[in-house]
Image 1 (cartoon, helix red, strand yellow):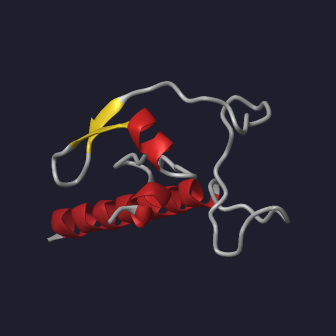
Image 2: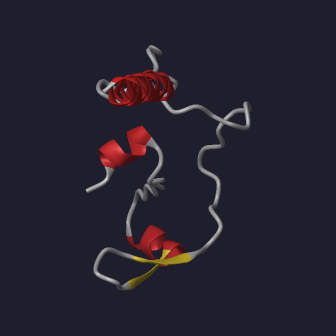
Length: 99
């Protein structure tokens, strides 16, 4: 009986430590800057430099949710504004944005 209780204690401690670690990772992406839109989540700039605005993006082709091939430059020329949002399945803020 004591082995089962010891194993249960180890499992509970491991779950609590994992939960504490996950909360620290999410808070790294939440910012409180004045220049952010209301309700937005701040994302770090890994390069540390200024983000370049109004620069041409490299062309690439991906499949949309329906499986149709989509080319970035074709979409960008058809619309006034094009926003490309990349997600990572391991990123908590990204997972919150996924449809």
